[in-house]
Length: 54
Image 1: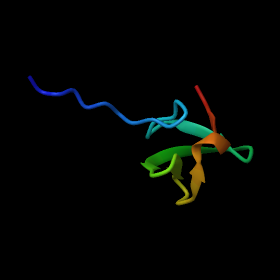
Image 2 (image 1 turned 90 degrees about the vertical axis):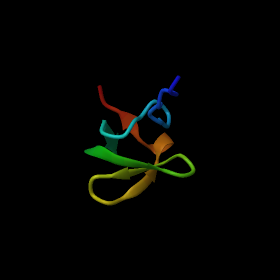
Image 3 (image 1 turned 60 degrees about the vertical axis):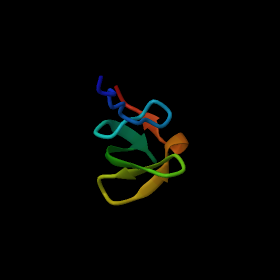
C-alpha cells in the first residue's frame, strides 16, 4: 500500500492559507525549517508570530 502524504503545518497553519502578521493579511507560500513561514511578499516570519485567519 502507498503511504498517504501529509501536508505539513506549523501551529495549525498550512501552505496556501491566509494569516495575519502586524495587522496585515498575507498568504502563506511555503513552510520553512524551524517553524518559519514564507509569505506572499517574500518575507520569512516565525509561525508563532502569525495568527491564522479562517
